[in-house]
Length: 307
Image 1 (cartoon, rainbow, N blue to C red):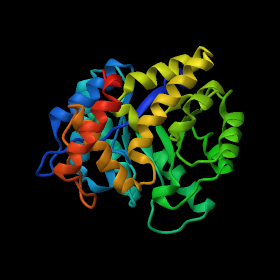
Image 2: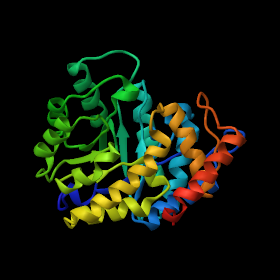
Image 3: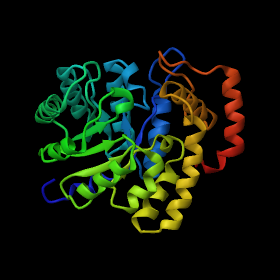
């Protein structure tokens, strides 16, 4: 990678993939392949074992199976990003080794989320993880699930580690976003990816390297078009696509916690024929009546956007 800018490798639309499941809770290989193929065909990369993918509710063998299928289906057309987060450092590193052997292209990790830890402990943890990780590592800041915020100052310090290639930041705040853009937009050795989908257009127009929107599972083409429009500085088109994708996201996210929004999103994807609506406990699969209502509304409002 020494002769190639990281910004030309770790960029674009990275979809935090939902995990299609069968009625008995197993990984649905056909559903996984369908979602991955939809992403790859629209030049988007899959991020498996993600928050949207209910990673905290999956077993390690199930996660490895997801990585295997995703790598096979992409056929080298896109990098497969694989979540390795775990409360046990050793298990995170074991996942990284396993996923590397399976062909994943990058690892993604947020902080352990049981004990409250300070900046010094965060720094030590991420440095130790990066030192031992056989894959390029993308840091993941998501306070809504970990209860921990990684400061910009610490992220910038960690950005100098030779095996840390970027950060996915899902912490909201316009001032934070602006500061991150100012720090990293010119850095060829570090990439900045945003998990705040509503700010995708703004971020990309101002130097963001990649976006990580959940709704790309359903409409990858819209997000790829948004990315391309922003990168050619077509502000009007990027803004139009931002409005469309915001409407889709709001349908399943507005006023709902993650544990409520993800099952609703799965019902939307089921309505589009992309996977089944089954969720992993402790999330609750929506009733057949709820699914039927969502299917009707999705067909009326959003079906035209689904390729």
